[in-house]
Image (cartoon, rainbow, N blue to C red; front, side, top):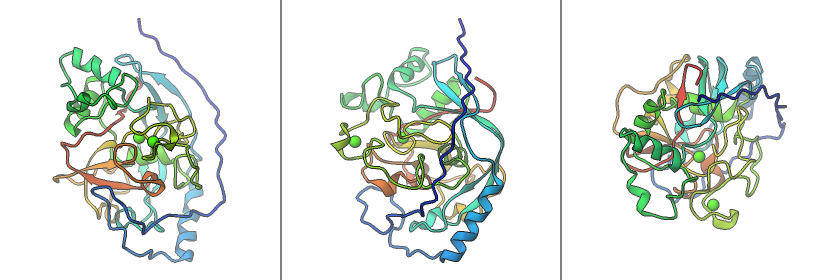
Length: 296
Ligand SMILES: [Ca+2]
Ligand SMILES: [Ca+2]
């Protein structure tokens, strides 16, 4: 009854040497955007020193995948180790400074949880129906489930896990080389489902519909498609005082962190950077993926 697939996948990691060209300081129409008017403070010298720290971490790649019994989700193993979190060169103050963070190993969903998967949790009398399902543009079986923070947490507990910490989300999406987007350091038009409908989708797409929106650990739709909840409370200054091992965010707060608010949040290339982080009312409806520390 239990189908468990395993793959050992060797993925060549493309590390571009192209300098990161951030689109900071532009006008953002989305709610909860950090202060875009903050000037870039890092000097080129400081940025170079920060990059020099990165090669100590092992290059990221897909190591192992397995399928979760409860909902058929594919999960990817992120091995224990260090990565660079945040970006010194970011125009957005909450993303500074770049700092090395070390995490224990964990498994994380390759896809955003879909409406069809979420329905399984409703049928088990654990999850409540998403209020956004009245909208037929967002309620297709293969589209990401968009739910409040508590509903996302309930789903992840139902499948034997929890929401990723902000650090776990950022490492899984970024790998260990400090890249700006999941696929590398250069933005590529139409590679992900962003807010424009020129990519074929004016709202969310089916999960996994953009194969180029792929992280070093094999996550799809990490830049585009649904905005995603993580477990942490939001603190704009958290990167300045984060613990170096397994940070779990502030102990309390009134806003949660959401990452990559694109297809259902407006915005463009700068909003889907791997370091972009935003405050969100926990009652808003966003997508999510789950993690677990044991093998699925
Ligand atoms: Ca789109
Ligand atoms: Ca996403």
